[in-house]
Length: 232
Image 1 (cartoon, rainbow, N blue to C red):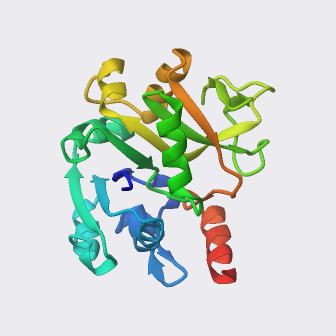
Image 2: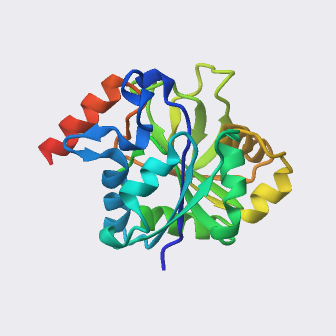
Image 3: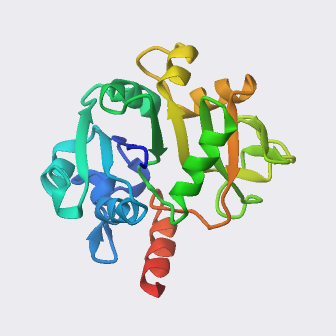
């Protein structure tokens, strides 16, 4: 049975304005469909059954489009953190009640056409309380922020970049409630802070993914994703 998926999707998406002045980023049109619909269809294809959407800015619009998810063959629940945005980590912490002890975390602007079952199996085998997927990026699609060798994440830091960082956070992770409890962060924090905390304590397993990641955080990212979808 596949783990549930939490999707932090509550940000203001200022880089996409004026598109996101009236709609949340999750509803941006991608080749004829709202992005969140494409994201959820991809999860369904990977045998995911339950999703918790952590929404904030104009989150009610997302709920109006997706509802309880039955039209997509999913069970979709919601956790709101508006108007006081809690950050990706804080929003996830608030949603823990509906996620159980182990769950995927998928960035709200990421389209990741990879094998989710293999990622889950890698997490189970690791014996660690968390796992991050990584991609050999070499600063091609975004700024690389991970040192990864022999199947291990050695360094993860989005603020202090060095030449040895050839990999990037792919956008899909597996977390446990225990990992979040141990970190002891307050109500407002970013997931990057949690991942760095776990990495520094050798509690973050790594799993390399070969498929390119796609994102809709920028106009260029939207173009690339649309080209990929239309070619497939």
